[in-house]
Image 1 (spheres, helix red, strand yellow):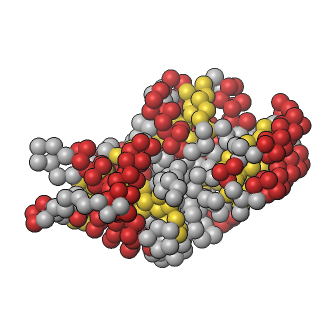
Image 2 (spheres, rainbow, N blue to C red; image 1 turned 180 degrees about the vertical axis):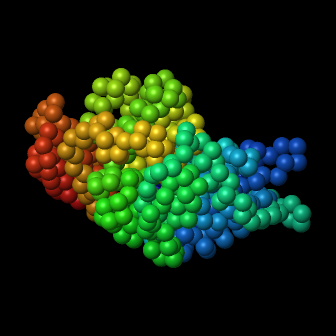
Amino acid sequence: MGRLFGTDGVRGVANEGLTAELALGLSVAAAHVLGEAGAHDGHRPVAVVGRDPRASGEFLEAAVIAGLASAGVDVLRVGVLPTPAVAYLTGALGADFGVMLSASHNAMPDNGIKFLARGGHKLDDTIEDAIEAHYRTHTLGGENWNRPTGAAVGRVREYTEGFDRYVAHLIGVLPNRLDGIKVVIDGAHGAAAYVAPEAFARAGAEVVHTLGTEPTGLNINDGVGSTHLDRLRAAMTEHQADLGIALDGDADRCLAADADGNEVDGDQIIAILAVAMREAGTLRRNTAVATVMSNLGFKLAMEREGIDLVETAVGDRYVLEAMKEQGFALGGEQSGHVILLDHATTGDGTLTGLMLGARLAATKQPLADLATVMTRLPQLLINVKGVDKSRVKSCAELAAAVAEAEAELGSTGRVLLRPSGTEPLVRVMVEAADQVQAKAVAERLAEAVRTYLG
């Protein structure tokens, strides 16, 4: 049996790979590993539990809460809120840990369980391993544990103030209001479907249109959100808006669109915010953090602006680790995970969109003009499904194909092959001087992946 925890918690098809029994058992294990770490002088561990609107989140939430309470943890149930909101509330309320039920941008049948440490921070691998070991020993292995009884069992309380407290936090950290900015918001029928429009309105923006803001539990990420930008891009010209933002299912990422409906990706957003923060004196150590997947144009832009760049492995957790270890304030991914560490412990799509809106309002410049801080070089990404992703680094034939592609591209491009941390596929990324060459090389490498790893 492989490791349960992936790059972003435990994920699977709800009620198939991710069952109520698994959710309950993992929650009991987390209660012991995370709850006991905070237990002292009669203190009862407290956990904040939230979810996105997926239908499966209802029974998984019940299982998680049952597991926590049965292990003596008091639960603050915040309901449907974004991952960054659960992280913020975990810290703001002094809880011992948090639990978020979401599969982010994945399709509705999937779901996931993400545990957050005290303060709302993502768990280290060693802590995840300890939770998994406890689960395997006590739940799967049948080893008994001391179950609390009577008054020692955990209590469950609805924390309905979470929505307003989180929105107030977002508004409170903005450098200026968004008055005069017309905004279109795509909430992905997800966790921020109500939060994001409310936050922008309270910040002074005119929300001229929304889409993806009617979650049914079955339609999350379905043709909307940060992985489906067509409707947002069309709405920008139709409603003559200044800024469009698209969130994902748990609202920890944000992509944008300008007034003409052109996409503004995570690299461009980070570049815009890096310049803004440098001018405001809040870009600590004059450095931005990004992954090896960032566009070469982003790197060139940071160099031109005199801003240092630190690169990490792909995954927002690695960006966050570098930021925390070295004291940086801004980092993120091309996919729209943007971390503003002075104000959030995770990527926060709503906060990112608000900060982008604040920059528009402060400079009085169109988003298209602000985005010219960097020029995106042609980059093609192909997801190759149905292959053995575990052999990406060990396959000699594939390594030879990559070396040949790199020799062809020379200094004008690059190649990156990586297994997905959340899905059964391999990502092939090629960057080149022109789109034709990028496409040709990417398709050739994708075929090599299918041939050698199929």
